[in-house]
Image 1: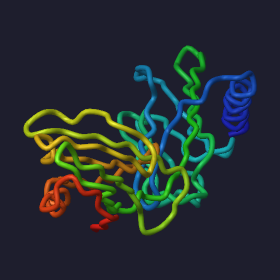
Image 2: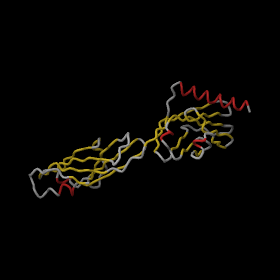
Image 3: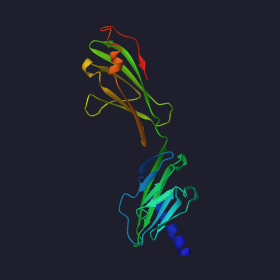
Image 4: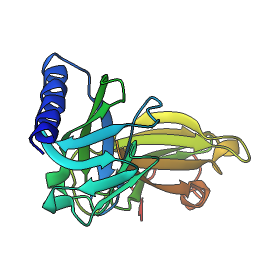
Length: 230
């Protein structure tokens, strides 16, 4: 029994030394109330293999003899091992789950393999909506300003705009929550797409601008006021 405890402490000490020596943590991203999967990046299967999964240097689970024992009560109902202990699935993520996870592998030959993960947990991205303002209409084009918005304001959001005409593939157009576009008459059926994203999630909203621009086509060559559409 004492020898087993000493073995565990030795493995964890070696793991902590590897982390403290500047080992790169693999970035992993998760979403609140969803799940995340931690996988060993190399093949570590075989007989006589033991693994210790830790969170912030606290033991979460121990794998040995093809069985996983979950040790940390906080994760007791939320951990799911697979692939002979080399994969760990964490369910029902919370913000408190963010941090450094590590797995230490003890092979039959006493050699230790260790890797670590830096888990960041994000709020889900809200569904966005578009606000379009026709700044002016002339016979040679329609000038439109588009603003992409979300009903709440979670952190770490980015905005990417793409467009396509007819059956073409989407093309990258712009970034930022607001963009401007000048449409020639033969391109006013263009579809514009706003993608709101963080490293773990994304949502999008799209619109064709033909209807908006055509509302102003009855008065050619006259600059129009701002028109808003949701």
